[in-house]
Length: 169
Image (cartoon, rainbow, N blue to C red; front, side, top):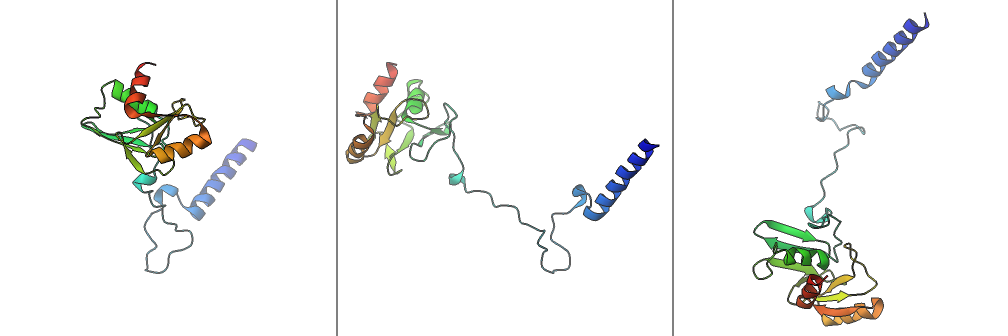
């Protein structure tokens, strides 16, 4: 006798819930009819984030890219993103990026300003570790490199010297 009573109570509860709240599948996303103001229950969906605010992940290690370490290379394949000079160097060494023909933009660790490979100063062996687990940070000027080294230690290298060192690892 208890089983039919329990089933009846559950069914009654479902009928009441549906009649009060309606079926979610049948609720419309359209505004109320009649032109009156929307009720407080009608909430607009959140606006999508702008593309630049979305998190970018490294094409090599898939780790998130910090804005002050972001590196992007525009190749025939499309735009590739790197979290640090170590990951970029691996693509260059593998021939997936040609610095002579592909446009590569690094970012100054201090100012986040764009830096070309030709003007990049790479700081190695500092106390700042890049996502790839090594200490390699990009600076856009000798002045910024000297400021960084005064606070974090390390040594300056050109991009070409850094790339050669990476090939020896």
